[in-house]
Image (spheres, rainbow, N blue to C red):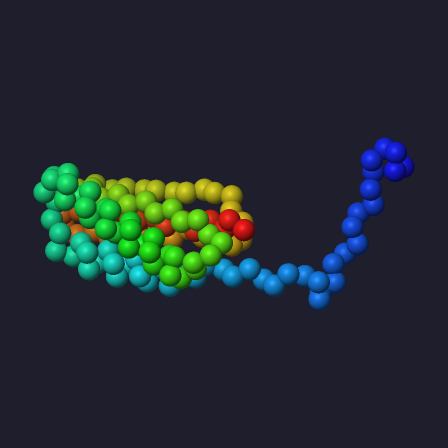
Length: 129
């Protein structure tokens, strides 16, 4: 049998030999931060259509969310933050996301709106190691 390249399965690992559990990302801590950040940043904001102002808000929110993610779990994750701001014209909206994740990967979505604008912030933490 060895000539065919077949091998026996490895013996089961004992409890003592198993690695320590990998730390999980605390998505509830991030969700609370995102909710407060969006509210304080955009509470008095009004849609002006000025591209530079909208880009500045999106950049500030994205960078601050990413910095907070690194504070929560600095190792073994890659972070992706998506921010979208659009004019609130009373339109409806719907978004869904289907993904195949490891148990340790997370997606946090927070929505803010006022009479003038709508902001969606999506933060992804994907385990790298």
